[in-house]
Length: 207
Image (cartoon, rainbow, N blue to C red):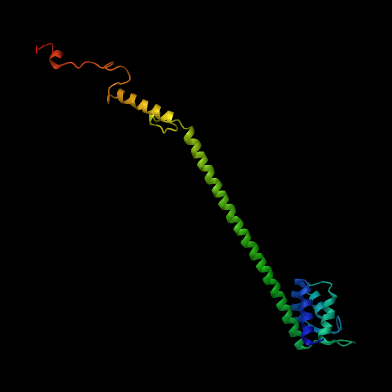
């Protein structure tokens, strides 16, 4: 198995571990004496998984131990300290895996936030539109229910019959105000004969 294949297998195994285990293992790799070939050497050296367990990253993931031993070509018997190059590769892939998943989570959270904001905007628009309709409806109701102070002949008409009735009312108002003579009866009815000035004074001058 080539070196690149071993590294790819290691990365795939790391990606399959829970996030909290990866974070704990990264801390352990930086702080502990890491070994290969055993869980612990009895002298303070521990494998990466034990280092993660000590920092709260407890999980049952035997596949990592197998992959780690293949990657480091662990001895068939006993253990040895991990080489600096091996630790660097492990730490680099742990960091990359953690960062990649953090970006996915962040993008997901951002997408959810954007969707929630858009939904809020749509709800607000719908509520404003509904409120405006209710206001207009109340205003129309109030106008129609309020008693009109205008004479009937000055109100808006809605039909031909109302229009004709309004014209008749206008004619009657003109007569009442003395703007025109009363033309509703026979010619001359209701009109007084004008009185000359000399008759009003009791004199008469023959013509």
